Image 1 (tube, one colour):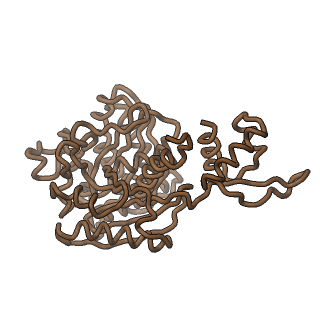
Image 2 (cartoon, one colour):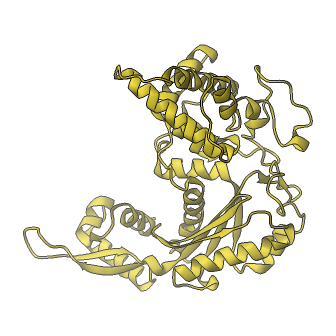
Image 3 (cartoon, one colour):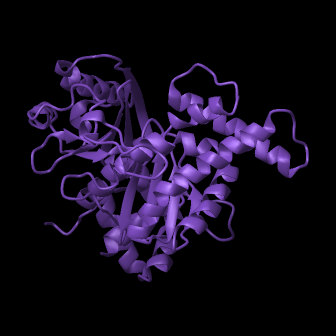
Length: 397
């Protein structure tokens, strides 16, 4: 327990002296010295220099040995796979992106291996140097069947033999997690939900979905489908049937990225010709800028329509979110994903106001803080947590 406490302190604070470790852990100097000697012999800590710029003699500083273990993470979408490698301290050591538009299912194992190898080569390592890989995908692998569900738009990942084939090809433990769940892990470890044991992360990018964290743990459901709220029937859109075949649902149609350009066109707003998620983000960014100008009394022509777009989008998002709040009663909702975050604070405030009218309870709404590669960062954090538990175990078990 003392060893792990010291290692966690070194991860949190960076290089520390023996005296400082003793003070932070409450251990005596001799015990702290023995602890550091044991960890150094195990290859878990290294001497990194001496303290300078303080009164008195300089002290030897110790840090976690970054080379003690490495992990990899993959963020998979229909268009590309982004892979990253991090050392045990969490510092990213390598990255690689493989474009995969329109490729068939027989390529999936090769694509994963190519992505992993590209990242480890960028880090100056080999595949054998990895302790664990975490792969984030849309949808979820059903623990009962091993098949990917809720992600028909991800070609090639639905073979019932895929997980066995990947396990045979990769010589280290491999875990699979829903991409939105991994974004929640990133916010829980590094971002807006660090102080919260119960929260919902609402994701709006190519698809709309949620991650549910209850008692500090992800809630996945029996088939891994907890949080697939794009399928929610909601007022304001026709009832969608056979949602598994159509890969869409009421809330997705009402408030997903594809809805934003439709609203904009109905309001006479010029809509760029881009992929719909990019278009939605660009439109909501313009609408947020219009809201800021309005607050400053500096509105320009066209701002009225943009403000209406922002208001309608907020109302639609709050409509589905009210159902989630009624079931889970979370204290915090984190708004994440490129589309919602593009609306910034003006959109967040409008959603909060709408939700206050639609829901019996009033959770706090915040914008996500991990805005760059949230899925990839969450996958790295998940892999690091599991690997640290294994590598930092000095009990001899």
